Amino acid sequence: MTPAERRAGASLAAIFALRMLGLFLILPVFSLHAHKLPGGDDLALVGLAIGAYGLTQAFLQMPYGVASDRFGRKPVIVFGLVLFALGSVVAALAASIQVVIAGRVLQGAGAISAAVTALAADLTRDQHRTKIMAMIGSSIGLVFALSMVAAPVLYSLIGMSGIFWLTGVLALAAIGVVLYVVPAAPAVPRVNGGRFADVLRDGQLMRLNFGVFTLHLIQTAMWVLVPAALVAGGGLPLPEHWKVYLPAVLLSFALMVPAVIIAEKGGRMKTIFSMAVGLLVVVQAGLYAFGRSLPALALWLTLFFVAFNVLEAILPSWISRVAPPHAKGTALGLYNTLQSVGLFLGGAVGGWIAEHFGSGAVNLACGVLAVVWLVLAASMNPPVRRPVAGATAR
Image (cartoon, rainbow, N blue to C red; front, side, top):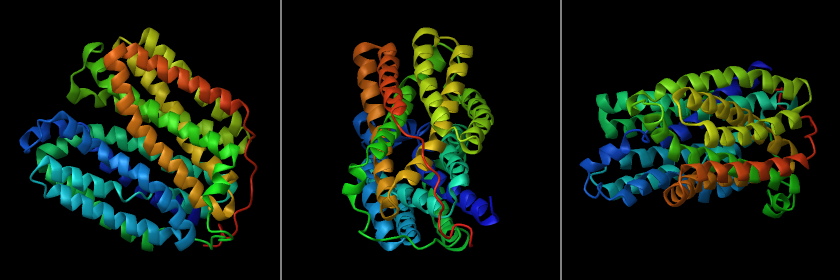
């Protein structure tokens, strides 16, 4: 990769990670903190405070993607980061659970994922795009693991308001990164302004969109069960769950790297992609049949993160290659919308299934969904490399 491509990948991964940081940092601590707020004993409101972020992300990813096709990537990203920072301030100053919800809604309105991934595609050549998308996609798993470790410590030091202030300051710092560190974006073709119909008619794109929806639904559905399983089956108290998460994520990164190299340099993207989806099926079957002890849980979680990180690297790269050049932001907007819908529905549906049919039914449902995805993946054509004009002239 050129120095400009490496700089683009690292800086955009940092910006993308900030979006997930706003979601993940409150997960280990907010339900306990909420009891200190008026209205915080209402579990429905607590759940809404956590999930409102993902819900507004789902509604606004598409408009942000379309806007980035029409007005440019960087202005849209900066606008989203400003909204994210404002939402952090509202949540930091909140004196009730309702005001926290308003702040989370405003945070989620900074739905910059589509514009960030479209800019990453603009700034990289085909032969290196999956590596860049690996940096961006893997930031989700890394931020999740780090949040599990850091959130309790940060909460004890600076409190919940301090955590929100911290995310707001980081958002403002990210604006400086966008303006002064991320390389200048090449001109984006605007033949018909990123028409939504062009994306909906593309069978390849829609199968990839189904994939990212499935991946993130499975992710959040699993985490309805995993914490309780680690406590009950593994005998691991909640503050020590990071001892499983962190090694699992780090080991998965080590296994992901050769897989991405084989996919790119070996021209075997579809093969690696299908193997990763198949691994999701194996993980759900393993959790259903052999997911009770701590060693077993650690194994299945590690394999899940391997599949998750490989797919997070390949999916947006594949989308960016097959999307019409004039509708790349629109395509990635729909992609990120369905990612957010999957995150939101995974928790809601996973919790409902677990409550009515037991935890094993969640693994079975996720396994069936992964099998459907595997069948759809088998009928896809491998992506064809295309030159990216202006990607090296930075």
